[in-house]
Amino acid sequence: MAEYEALIGMEVHAELLTESKMFCGCRNAFGGEPNSRCCPVCIGLPGALPVMNKKAVEHVIRTALALNCTITPNAKFDRKNYYYPDLPKGYQISEYDAPIGVNGWLDIEVDGKETRVRIRRVHLEEDTGKLFHVVGNVSHVDYNRSGVPLMEIVTEFPPDMTTPEQARAYLVKLRSILTYIGVSDGKMEEGSLRCEPNLSVRLRGSETFGTKTEIKNLNSFRAVYRGIQYEVGRQIAMLERGEKVVQETRGWNDAKGQTFPQRSKEEAHDYRYFPEPDLVPLQISEAWVEEIRSTMPELPDAARRRFVQQYGLPAYDADVLTQTRAAALFFEETVRQCNDPKAVSNWMMGDFARLLNAENREIGESRVTPKMLAEMILLIKDGTISGKMAKELFEKMFATGESPRKLAEAAGPQITDSGAIQAIIAKVIGEMPDVWAALCAGDEKKFGFMVGQVMKASQGKANPQEVNRLLRERMQQG
Amino acid sequence: MKLSLEEIRKVALLSRLELEEAELERQTKNINDLLARFEALQALDVTGIEPTSHSIPLFNVMREDETTPSLSREETLSNAPEQLDGYFIVPRIVEGI
Image (cartoon, rainbow over all chains, first blue to last red; front, top):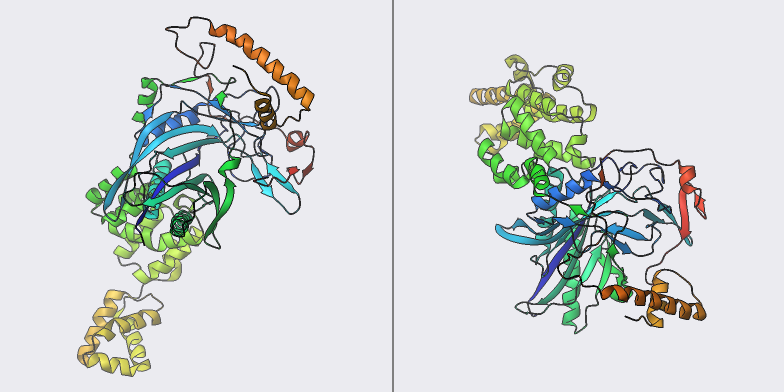
């Protein structure tokens, strides 16, 4: 089979973190009673006039700076005209030929190889309402989302990405930056961050471009990866069969793991863009840009390097812990209180991450605070609780938000008394004399097993160092 | 610049305007007359004048990011041709038709 390569571009939409909508004072929030956050501006009543939300404009300038863009000094808004029930005015206010940010880039790394992904534009627009297709010949419309500030980030053509791994890395890093600088909550499952990759394939070394397709409704990193992987395979198989790829938008069916045709180019809209007469242009002065630049937080790349240097963390830990600013802040605050970076990292990447994932929660939404985690780590260090007790204690702390000291007291003290531990050891030996005999005969692999059994028999309360020491002592006695 | 009847037909469709043939012809003439009047402006010498999208020297009219009360749901839905459970009801849209 001939060797093909894929060219992958990406359009990302992010709802901006503001209190109010883009052009009116209705609250910008997720969910709630349908049509409860609406006003004449965002449901398009005649005569209503939009007024720009300054914070939203600044969020886009901030993003453009973080993505190394040039800021357009004279930006403006345009009308993108089309009829669809989720768009009450019959046009979307967007930016057509003078977007706020242009010509930026984002460096990504996959398997040790760095790639610079060029970014063509970053612009500001408004989100549409939500359509719910119900049974029968009607749809339900909720305009709560209508007019929410929406930012679009588009990669440059020809695309710099060629693999699904790169596309995923781009998205992971972009999401990380957007959450760091506080412009987006990055929640793909709630649709506040939406990603539409477009891709074509061609014979490696070819100078021409193949026909591209776009994939929609990918609502997780995994779906993005699988969707692109599937679509690359589908296009290559078509070319191998001598068929032509049709330029179209394809949807993603996560259950089937397939893309399916949604809209073809022939029905593409004719948007008839023109300058929005209800809004005056934006003049973005250097002073304004510098003011925003001066309040830019440390970006994830810089934080990652600093975590390795300052805390001596492995690169992998630093990478995971700096993926969201909330996690990075949580880590630093916890370390400040217990001064054990590796222990904090292990808890955050292990039990804590597992429990958060299981409940689909972000670290900021957890009952566990840096103070609580630090206190627990100190309890392990001073021998008040064992590592095994800590695992259970952490789960209780995660579920209840109770302080680790109180939970440790309720669970009873750690067993350190030699006599008590010797009694447990004797009991375990009595239950499994064969294992004990093998261990005494020199089968060292059985040692860890015996320690585990003793810990289990003590319900995790025995001091592990003491168990180790007393088991050895007992072995010498034979 | 002159627009053809077909171009006007397409614009009417994009604007969801249902026009009969006689109306289409009349509107084609109206719009072309209007364009002819704009052509008079093209005779002006604009050498050295920066193109602009807006005609008033006003920029950066913005508001602070603060919320104001929304309409009640009853008010929001009061013009809805059909409604159910707080939603606007619209005919189902099927892509590609």
